[in-house]
Structure formats: C-alpha cells, structure tokens
Length: 243
Image (cartoon, rainbow, N blue to C red; front, top):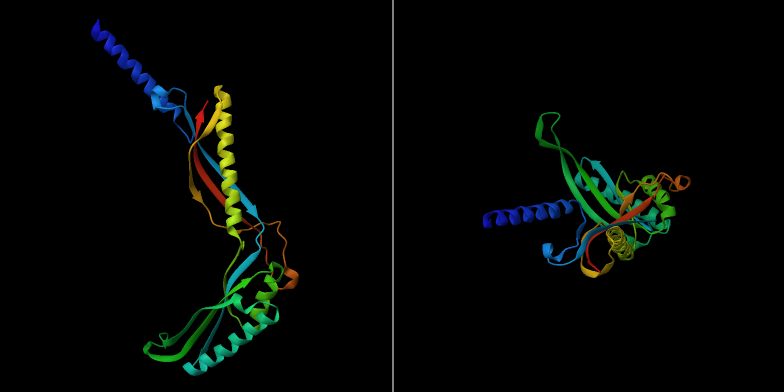
C-alpha cells in the first residue's frame, strides 16, 4: 500500500510539471500557483516601433583624379575639390558641416602591359563628409557637387538630429505594450495585473533610413531624393505581479 501511494504522488508531480512546462511555450508565462514557481506573476515581452520623418542627411562626396605625375594629379584634385566645396558653400551649407574623411595617392602600375614594376600614373582621392540640415536641398546639393567636379558620392542616409527623444518614445511604447499584453492575459485568467516585478530592455535599434514610396521627392531641385522615414524599435522584458 505504501509503495502504491508513493507511485501515485510521483505520477501526480510529473503531470503537474508537464502541464507547467507546456504553459511556458512562447514569450509569455502565467503562473497561478506559487507552489510551482515560487510566486504569482506574468512574464511578457513588449515591442514598439516608432517611425518619424528625418530632419538631417549625410553623405560622402569625393573627387578622384588621375595624371602621369603625382604633383599634377594632386594639383588637379585640389582644384576640383575646392570647386566642389565652394559650390556647396554657395548653396548655404555651413563649413562645420563639411569635414575631410580621407585623402590618398595611389600609383597606377602597368599590369595590363605585363609591366607591374612600371608606374604609368597616379590616382588621387579626396573624400569629404557632408551633413545636410535642410532636406529640401539634398538633391540640389548633390547635383551641385557633381556639376562642380565630384565623381564619387556614396553613403547617403537620413536620420534625426535628436535620436534620444525618438528612442525614449519607443521605450515608453514598448513598456505600454508589455502591460497591455499582461492585462489581456490576466483578464482571460480572471485575475488582475499588479506592480512591476522586473523590467529589462532587451534591444533598441538606432535610427536608420527607411524607404517610403509615398515620400515627397525633391527631383525639381536636382538629383531625385526621397527622404522616407526613419524607424526606431525597442523591446522590453517585463514581469508583473498577479493580484
């Protein structure tokens, strides 16, 4: 008789354990019995994405030149780079928003003629970081740079000047989403959500360019540009008491 009772209790414990583990599937845990997990709580994951219009743009504008002599190649590059910077400043870009990123001189060897030891000329490259604070002028600025002699433009991206405010909004909405999920589960179980036991930010994305086909295009002022939206996403892990 004693052996049968012990086996019965053992089977009951296994069944309770299996039921609890089955209920843990997914990103939400509801534990109504503190004899199983130690306390009554609901664990949820809250997510939120905030999309805002960008208010700043940046790009790398470069001038590449080639000449048979290194001094000649540098002189030509200096002339073209000065013309590009002057054109941008005429359009109103502030000098503090132009910063040299890189400058290089590279020999061009006669590989095609099977003369790798022979230098037939020199490549000179000067690249400038450009920050644009008026998005209505992005296309015009890029077109002006090309017209003045820029032959390398890359890294165009849109973002926000004050990312902290957007990130804070994403965090706030992620916490609100977590509470909404917890309240939905609690209502279905016939209990109420109490205070926060723990709260942890598990991820936060930085503002990045997001193409929006409905965005305004500034084609009339130069190179067609669509600023689109920037998105910031936040995810939090929250644990709430059950009342």
